[in-house]
Image (cartoon, rainbow, N blue to C red):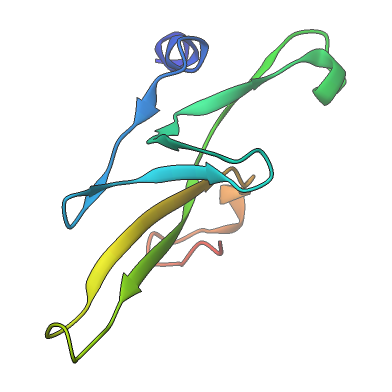
Length: 106
């Protein structure tokens, strides 16, 4: 399974989600771009990790931003105008949780 996941990262596979017929976008205001979907993960070179070989990371948390417009004079309810994602990876220590009912902090 790990080899398969590494291949997905190497081949730059992206995950695509939809909300109210809008595709999720990953944006960068600094670089002035937006792309559909988000990558499965990323490969960190030895210069980043300090290890001998490349290290692979999967994104295990997503931060969503949903933009909407509310104008009672024009329409009822709200209209979704944007659906953005910021994928992140957090390291968890699962060994601290003994029971299945225990919650895992994020």
